[in-house]
Structures are given as C-alpha cells and as structure tokens.
Length: 151
Image 1: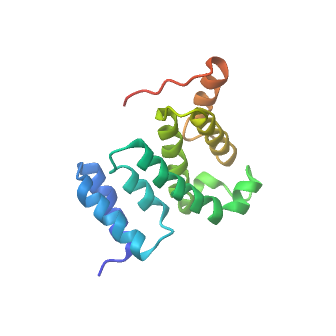
Image 2: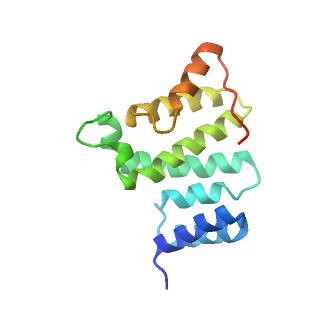
C-alpha cells in the first residue's frame, strides 16, 4: 500500500493530466487516512463543479494551516523561519492563494475584501512575495477591484 504522500502526489499528477475523477479519488483517499493533508483539500477543490464547493474546501485547508502554523504566522515576517523556504508550508500557501482567487470570483459581498486580507497575510509570511500578491493588493487599493487573467 502506498503511503498517503505518494497517493497525494498521484492526485497532483492526475490534475496535470486533466483527470479530475482520479485526482478527486486520490484526494479523498488521502483525507480518509490523513485528515490534515492540506494539499488534498487543494486538489479536491480543483475537481468540484461550483465555486462555493471550492471555497468551502479551501477554507478547510486554510483553517488547518492556520492551526498548524499559528506561531509562525503570528511571528511573520521572521528571519529565523523563512516561511516560503520551508517545504511543509507550501500546501498552506497554496490553499490560501487558491482560496483568495476563488473569493475574487465569488459575487457575495465581502468576498473581495476577504481575498485582499488573505493577500496581505501571504505578503506578511512571504515578504519576498514569491506569489506576486503585492500587485493584486496595489490594484485593489488603487481601483477598489481586481482583474484576474484567465490563464
């Protein structure tokens, strides 16, 4: 039997191949074995039909990351813990980034503001801004909106 990390990696490979059914199956298997596997929430969010489902899954992944990395997030930016440089933080950052983008697409009041707050959090924990959120924050502060590329 494969360990859960290998099954999760298979899920990512299925995403890359466009095989959403098998990707979802892998993510569910991982979450049955390891309920705190943040990346499996991200994988599963890529396989659902509605933005509301996507947001719910990504919120759960982000909630887990907030709990797991609470001290590091509160201390950010921190010269002793380079958040982006730690492989174990990447799934949390992916969950936050995907959640923010899903919120931009959400038409409910307050969703864009929530996305901007997530970008500010990402910028605080990753001041080198490897994700480019400073541009999204600047666009929002200048125009009150954000236009995302379709690619």
